[in-house]
Image (cartoon, rainbow, N blue to C red; front, side):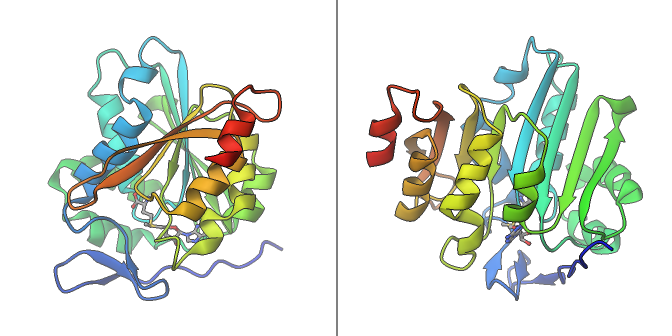
Length: 247
Ligand SMILES: C[S@@+](CC[C@H](N)C(=O)[O-])C[C@H]1O[C@@H](n2cnc3c(N)ncnc32)[C@H](O)[C@@H]1O
């Protein structure tokens, strides 16, 4: 029998930002979830440019949450005349929302109305493991993986072109940013795979560097001074390996 999943409970901070009482943190920047997704996760991974001219492109995310990053990516892909033929979006989530709660939360973004409708209609039962949802005639494939990231990433069969690291803050959600998770992500990367995250915490940088990612700080979104962008340069065989380990 599949291990049971504890769903997330939808609650809002006073300013209307969705918040997790379990983790004591918000689901997205109070300055704007869609803008944050575009600035940090899409631009941080060189998207939409990098999927142009490709047959397929694969994004791997830690923490599906409300699916804002997914919908921002799906919308950018839909609106790009030079998009790759197939977009694959794989996201691991330990505490998924019900489709009803997703629909309530998504009402704040009119630009996502039709995507949210499609996503919520196809939303799977909250059962641990992988759920594959084919959208846009199978050209946008969402692979939702319910369960703990560490456990699920180890068994995942994927080849990521871009990685979105979007846990709650590393201080409140350390297991999603652990050295083991970073190594598990590296297993699914190849030289040239990029990553982006809003966090520049020292522990996150050390874990990613040790796993073989070269990192650079870039201007952050809204009130945040910095964010991280990175590129996998492979492990011991890379001339950058030692440099990465020390960063
Ligand atoms: C900041 S929210 C993600 C927001 C999301 N990317 C979006 O676009 O709406 C962080 C998410 O990480 C999930 N999470 C926390 N710890 C996890 C773990 N160990 N494994 C998988 N998911 C986890 C939380 O349940 C939460 O949904």
